[in-house]
Length: 369
Image 1 (cartoon, rainbow, N blue to C red):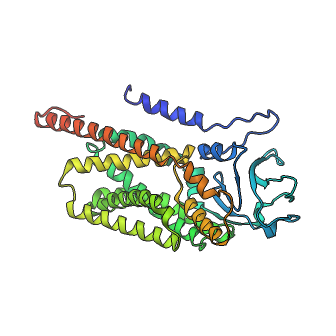
Image 2 (cartoon, rainbow, N blue to C red):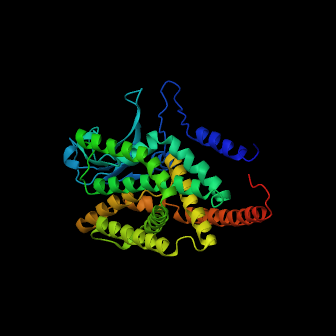
Image 3 (tube, rainbow, N blue to C red):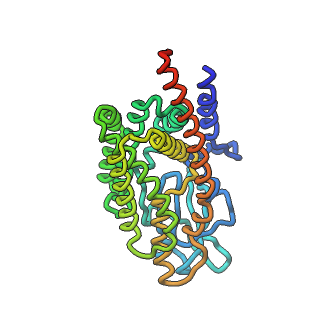
């Protein structure tokens, strides 16, 4: 029982963090549900202004504000500011308004009139994937301690997770290319069906991975390649000014294939390497799950869209600091890298130590259960 107390405490703590209080006792609190860190970082600071790109972390939407759809505006390049719209007290929401300074005037802005892309799969994961979220954290912590000893359980769970990640990436690319625009009812139904299909069949995929050895190498390779490629792409994104989405796809494809081939060749010949990799995957799962609850981890598709808008803007004229620069300054990637390395090192130590103790007991015919 003592072993599970930290996990129970963490579970309760995450639920408490997921609350959002309102200063106005007569207004129903805004239930952000997830991504609280982004919400507070971007919306509770009155000094943050932006030009054209607006990020709604609650709905996971990227907006491009078209000044032609703002009536009574007297400038082509207005500055906007976030605010909480409490017009509808039952459903208060995040919106924007012009930053008026006596010279710039414009009326209220209806975001439905502007171009937007919603990352529907991620939104569904954040809204309804609470079970997956807590499983990623709790199973991740367990695997950092005994992931290699309970190898089949580890393989089954993270194979299911990799299957979900595959469909998540598939939907993200379609949304980035504007081939899956969930403003359209048909597209929304398709996206929802894909989401349900991936969640339900991921369990089957996890079970198959325990039975068929080579599928587990796909699991290891795919998650490894995904993590490394996203990290690398985030670092080099500043220097990319053309074919941004294509280069993102190629980066992920190359790294995923390279790691899959690596695991197919080396298999499980070196247990220590496998243990370190289990810890790396577990740590990524913990960060991924925590991000779905409270946010904070850089969301690459937002960076890609913001970077594309920045390139377009810079080609037209130099303006004020944009949302891409703002996100870059608030990414805290160095902190996440430190957390990742720390957990991998701690987890590797526990896995290697516990596995040695497990094998020693097994050789002495001592019960290991």
